[in-house]
Amino acid sequence: MNTLFDKIWDAHVVTKLEDGPTQLYIDRLYCHEVTSPQAFEGLRKRGLDVFRPAQVCCMPDHNIPTLHQDKPIVDPVSKKQVDTLDKNAKDFGVQYFPIGNAKNGIIHVVGPEYGLSLPGMTMVCGDSHTSTHGAMGAVAFGIGTSEVEMVLATQCVFQTKPKTMRIRFEGKLKAGVLAKDMALYMISKMTTGGATGYFVEYAGEAVRALSMEGRMTLCNLSIEMGARGGLVAPDETTFAYVKGREFAPVGEAWDKAVAYWKTLKSDGDALFDKEILFDASEIEPMVTYGTNPGMGMGVSSSVPSIEEMEESGRASFAKSLDYMGFKSGEKLMGKPIDYVFLGSCTNGRIEDFRVFADFVKGKKKADGIVVWLVPGSWAVDRQIRQEGLDKVLNEAGFELRQPGCSACLAMNEDKVPAGKYAVSTSNRNFEGRQGPGARTILAGPLVAAAAAVTGKITDPRML
Figure 1 (cartoon, rainbow, N blue to C red):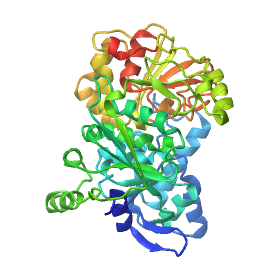
Figure 2 (figure 1 turned 135 degrees about the vertical axis):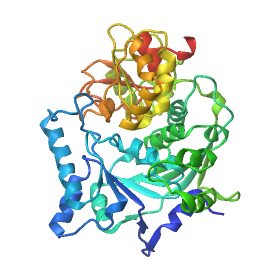
Figure 3 (figure 1 turned 180 degrees about the vertical axis):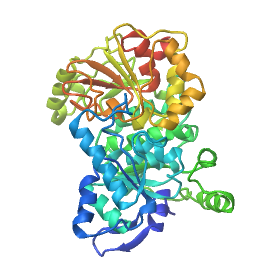
Figure 4 (figure 1 turned 90 degrees about the vertical axis):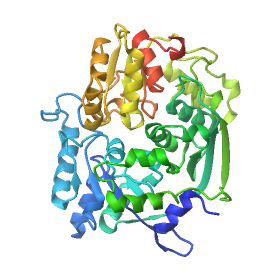
């Protein structure tokens, strides 16, 4: 009668405090430059070493530039953060993929692609989008900096066990609809607080049909509806993805691991605290019209009216539309845009670049549009070149940048100017997220590709 989440969680419980939190063992801690400095400094002040350095992996991603990575970082704040991580990783002897390293990239892209993230694991990072790794069939969630220090020192963390929710996508997706559209549709229905306090298992025909990249996109966005994390039961798709990756088990260890991974599924009579069902066939390519990921709609739909909102949310709804320069009842199709961003831990994987390149093949980049194509890792960059996607992109007038978080958030040089519109495949469209005054329209790689060649918000199915 156990859910998949319960099975993994219970297998990692060290102690349970009476009327208090659970001490949970952590298999993998990921650290980047933004949320780890104070944690390492805390160890220094207490004279502590990292308890299990082999289970820690560090890399810079948020602050690194996506051009000229062979030169010193220009921005002094970014440089200090990256240099501090460099020193901390070396001082404490943890696994480290620095800027310029062949394994560097966005930490939530690199972990799965090297087999550092595996089914059945517990994984944490001082970053909310750690939920991405749940696609492997793992319990992965973001933690605060003080908790990062706790895991560095003990390989454990205190957590209150969340409730469980299962979200099923039954039926088949229509042509031109991707995992990002599933996620934005889901959040528009659930709202940004609809899964608060829950850990979500994604299931159903449409989820099983997703590639691992698609599952990572779906799990990545769990946090945007308030969930603690999201996961998908491992299956043959998972095992095929993991097999042969650098840090994955081999030989007898592989056979033993797969035998265990096959047990990682919710029992047929498992009880969830909440169950949600969506019809996958109803989803169309999605865009956001406001300043949180829950303000989403089908690309052919119209912006809702204020009368459709609950009274308590009308003031923030009006403020959001004012910031975006949109009006209730209007369609966004045909709206001119200024920037397109393909990348981030949500859509910076090889599959996303295949989708984008396949769409723009034989077409040309729209005049006057700035397009940032940023691989999620150097491994993705290498695969893009091996498959000749870079040539397709170049012929269409696009250029690849170097890996990093880039324009997902305004912590590096890739900032969208005030008042400009960006169609972005990232995960958040908050005010100023992509730069002070920037206006972000979240979408999937196909909608982004259509915008890049037309210069406006376009339904990719019409091309």
